Amino acid sequence: MRTKIIAGNWKMNKTLDEAKALTAEVIALTSEVKGNARIILCVPFPYLLATKTQLGNSQVQVGAQNCSEHDAGAYTGEVSASMLKSIGIPYVILGH
Image: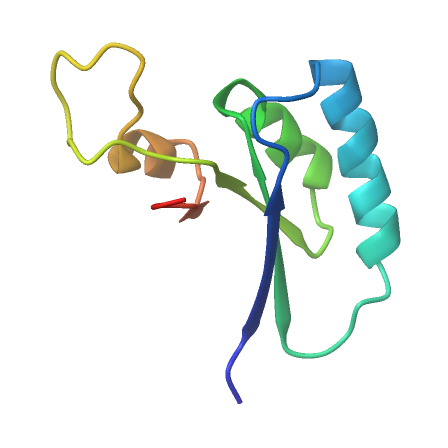
């Protein structure tokens, strides 16, 4: 059976406190989801580590909203896949 992926993001919205409140709601609303589904919350870059920590052992996982096509270089404001991997972010939304 294929794994179903349920992913969502809130674009460039929310303060950190609002992000924490929404993450808490998502954890509560998904706590009883059963079956073959992966739930991923893709958050703005500044909130990745805070959200990852808050999600803890919940079934919700964290992802980024984008990443650069470049591995490294003079690309101000860009984030590479290797940078995301280095902080334990396994998912990213691309091409949206």
